[in-house]
Image (cartoon, rainbow, N blue to C red; front, side, top):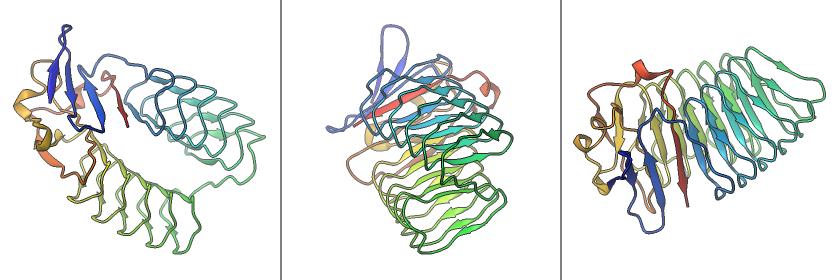
Length: 288
């Protein structure tokens, strides 16, 4: 449901008994994620923001316009910095780094780092087992072992049977086939579709539209910035006319979590956020 506080902010609050979800408006106020946020938090910082030290394990950070992951962030951090940013020394092992417009991976970043730096440099001393991936297509064949990180910037497909914990970034479309194992992270920056049957805990970031099909398993995170697409859930009573106009936010960003399968409805807002692309500053946290 929607709640208004004394400062004129609007919050979208899930009423699910086992979930605490909240979105605070307006979108133009910089936010910080507090220390010791519980584990398995998905953080979407659209134009800055910082994940403080000691954020618990398995944090996914999407910083689209800068920002930094501070030292001491727990292991298994996935970092997507689309316009710069730096991963500081001492970040724990198994860091996935995608710096599309520069950025540097500092020396002594722990082993098993997957680096895709399109316009930057991987410094000396980066530990062994670095996977630098195909920029113009490519396919991950069936049977590739678990914990495969796939970065296909110009299409490509992750075949069925690829083991669990696959991170997929298809920047120009692409499809994650059905039956890809659980815990798939999908970022389709220019459309794309997550097919039905993809296992639970799918993270979807579609910056230019895209659709999350019905019956995609529980705990789907949807963030659609462009195309004026508002993702809402009628189960929570989030009607379009109740959102956006009063606080200056013209495209309602809906973060939906529930204990069961989620049916995502689409509602097109009157205006999109394109005119505010450089200004919107939002931090959205969902705590289990």
